[in-house]
Image (tube, rainbow, N blue to C red; front, top):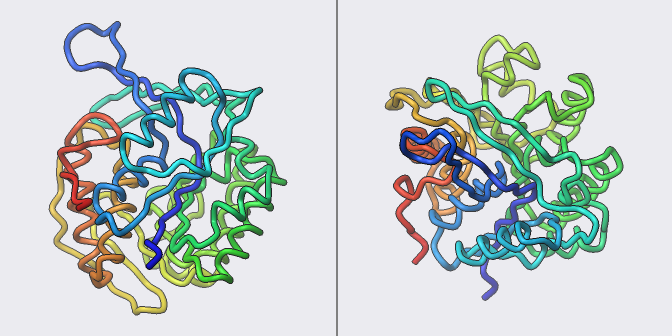
Length: 309
């Protein structure tokens, strides 16, 4: 029997974060990126009868090699990570203040900007995937032709049975302008089986008055299910399996919110694939995220003891 596959699509980068301790000149090197973070948590939350893969593009230098080695060490398949002889993996650095993060990026010439250049490679990567996961950042780094090629490939995969999961992850600095960002996110909603927006972003960039408005807007655009992350406040969901509000979620004082949404996404998907109902999956996802934000860094092993058995 073929093992089911979740394919995460996007950009992985070299991550620089302050090393623990008092020496402010020391930085820690890691590999991260929103869809890679989600893949990492999924690999640890799903049993071994699931495969977790990554679709991207990197260079041929040492740091790109490190990224591929990292995927192998963590059990994430990299067969569909392409190599670009002219470009390299991107870089970003994290600064923290009171648990909230800000980023500095060096990604304009990132190889991942070409991840959708080859339609044959796209189709091959998506072939047979049970779930395809991507984000607004995945779209933002691509040229317009790349976005159109990716949507076409996802439409074809969806017609063949792949479920598409999309986190808008709205980052206006990555887009040419806010209008383009909104237009591209809305176009993606029409191809989405599970939409995982964050209410703070949706209120800021789409003007939603409340989480119910976010759910209604994305359902009207064609999404089949919407779960609105809400920073520890009640989580509203809606779609083909019904509507509801999950309340009473335990809050935490954040140390680092870098991977709050990514870990929630993974926790939710893993719980659903293991048979949980929507409300229980939201509670499980919140608990993963709540632990993650109490630790520094994007990938927090303490939050997800390896369940892949």
